[in-house]
Length: 202
Image (cartoon, rainbow, N blue to C red; front, side, top):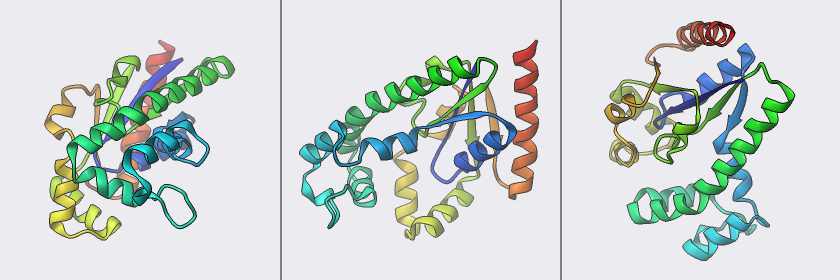
């Protein structure tokens, strides 16, 4: 089985690439879905996050408000690192449980670990190949402003909190530039998936 890492900065279109790969037959392991599960009440990681960041990150129902939590950690690097130290080990553990389950049930599959912080967490070392999704900076700023209702300054602050794209490029085996429409992206991803399947069968 071939295990692919998929990563990219905010609003680059990483999740759209994951969906296209899934449409092509890849098995997707989604770090964000795992994180959502780990932040649900009753999870050990939920308790750790509330103990660390306080009840201010909870909504009226007693669940973690992901937007409030994100706003809190994006403003403060030390808090962001604290959150990552709680979540990353648990997320990575769940990712590889899912990858191994895929390997057992579908040994010829291509498994894709879709994770925004794949490089930063060091988990990229465990995959066979790494795909990085990128987009022009002005386009990313515009997407973040529209998607999250942020000012230009707010969008730039979110982008600046990430590992620089130039640095991420040094880790990537494949780079997908997502500056066009969905059909253009679909064409690029489909061609890449075919080449990955071909390489797996060689």
